[in-house]
Length: 418
Image (cartoon, rainbow, N blue to C red; front, side):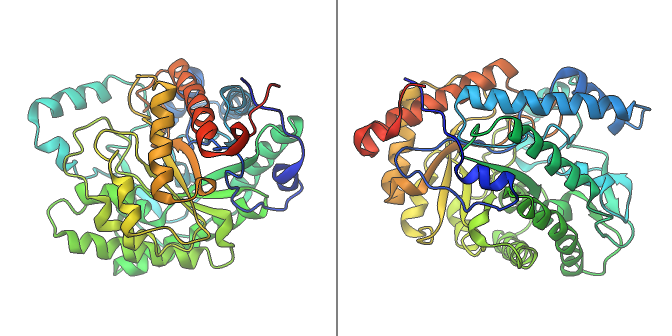
């Protein structure tokens, strides 16, 4: 069974510059993902060379990234994604791309190791060897520092990203129910880009929030939903805060959420979803902070939806936390029901079972969207899932959502041949 092709609607409005509200699963469970999708090998290689400081042909990067954008939009539609994006094809990383868009950055430093990696020496050796052997833009070392005042330089790069994506959507009317673009949280920058300029963390976050506000507003002003990527709100417990009390980490989460809210002052909450995760690494994750410890702080974000991972074997049970700390009545949940770190292709019935369990806790299936735990290629070359398997997993997401819809909605949820 295939779904009927849609035309017009919210995305048509988006292409004309009017941002749609977050869509709900009105008659069937909608599907989405978390942002980054596999980049072509040639484009990845150029991004890696540039990140290493080697000379590259920027015109070739531009050409290849535009080709990749067109291909990734079509591939999402073929896989059955309802709420799609540009796959972050024009970026080398979900946050490191900002090195060319922000002032005040320079030098380099090494991020702290992860607590869950440190406690297993044999695994750590294997993990480091695996990453060293890959052609990838590293998110482990060589991170920039803030050595001067951080400001957003100008909006030409984000405007061009939006223009390119809108052009592809205009050539493919009705390809998505709606479209989104991502931008990082000020918290991931504050922890990954070492502060050597501001007197306090609060001052640094304020500067980062003001800079990112330009990008947040540009995305929404161009007619897209905004996804704020905030792995810091869970990940940093076992990185920056690994030797500190959990109360200090929760205070950090609250501080970052307050910063995000200020950055979104001019953006309606129903045009934003917040993605939180424990890091896109295939590692033990047994030092992760429980969702129950941070969820009350996350619910303080002035956003229309949360994007949370519930497919991986460490956090698959934590959807139950939403019983004690439910979403606001106007919010949706994008539930990760596909693991972005393994090459297992989830059986559609497994996906459907996950969707139904989570829907029972949310209480209203129209407020549930089926998604992935995290991006598949958060930094170019970082992904562990082969590209052809990524698309098979997203096809299984589509079929699992169809099966769940048969039980959650009357008349089979609106799936029909096309």
